[in-house]
Amino acid sequence: MLALVLFLLTYMALLVFSKYRAWIALGSAILFVILGILPASKVFGAVDWNVIMMIAGTMGTVYFFIQSKMPALLADHIIDRMPNVQWVIIALALFSGIISAFVDNVATVLMVAPIALVVSNSLKISPVPAIVAISISSNLQGAATLVGDTTAILLGKQAGMNFADFFWYQGKPGLFFIVQIGAVFSAIILMVIFRKYKQKVAMQEKTVVQDYFPTMMLIGTIVLLILASFIDADSKPAITNGLICMGVMLIGLIREVIRSDKPSQTIKCILKEIDVFTLLLLTSLFIVIAGITEAGVVNEIGRIFANISNGNGFIAYTLIVWASVILSAFIDNIPYVATMLPVTAVIASHLGISPTVLYFGLLIGATLGGNLTPIGASANIAGIGILRKNGNNVKIWDFMKISFPFTLTAVASGYVMIWLFWGRG
Image (cartoon, rainbow, N blue to C red):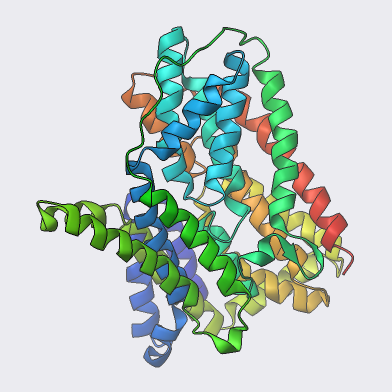
């Protein structure tokens, strides 16, 4: 009961005081240890350092990639081939989705949104629809690959999935293809929403890229992660993926230091791009979740959930998907997914089914559910922030008239496809 009460208080505080989430989680983790709920000897092992290193390394590499202006150049080429604004918005949304499958969602929005601003300003139209479409599309693809989003990395850790498993898992299509099906259907929805945007568009000047090394870094990270996925787990360190991501980032850092006239300032600028707040939050949550697991809370929640489902795997799957959609529309999906992954494993064991279908349903529901509202996903918050800086205040209705049909379509298609592929065994 003590562990459960402490956990519920922690979660309530995370919701109410969002600016201090990392410190709240850290304080809770410390209390779990001080109160003896989680033995101090188990603290270090509770943290998945592979996940932490992967996120930190990818953040650094993405910074170099953005600074190289390669994303802007790719977007320019796409826009130059589009006949009107409707297709520009669709193309930018799909482009942001492709980038976001391999790059952090927020970073993707920061890359692509400025292009939409330029196009909108040149045509003297509101940039709100385009940037909303870019934000929700980038969030959609976060579940497509192992490095697409923090929630995907958490799933990989829980299920023991490697990079290749997101494409093809146990002889069946993986999450990548399920997400792409959702992307196709949701793109059709965007085409209907923006059917009246028929203004002609033409790029005046393309972005110039003078440094292609960061692009090779990002590609190299992906290739190395793929290659590492073919190595037997017993033959490689548990932090292999983390070492790859950190190693590539450090190569870029060393290169920039050598090229810079002010090495110390360069190091500070790059380190600022690593979101220490998120890393601290996640590290602390690992400890908190280990604490409630140690106290038996996770097992009890799983048992209760299985009872509600009346032993029916389809009912359990349905509840997890759509409850995740609703909850993730208002709360951060990182702590939610981190908490629910071990719970879904227990639910599956009580029901006597493979946890894969519940894992995949959780990730689809939680990742895409954040698209319902402007505050449901970090990518959405970043997009709204860019618009606000540009003098555009976004009303909830302006956001949701695009996000609501987009999200329901993407989740519904994923919900059906996951059950068809994985629900029968």
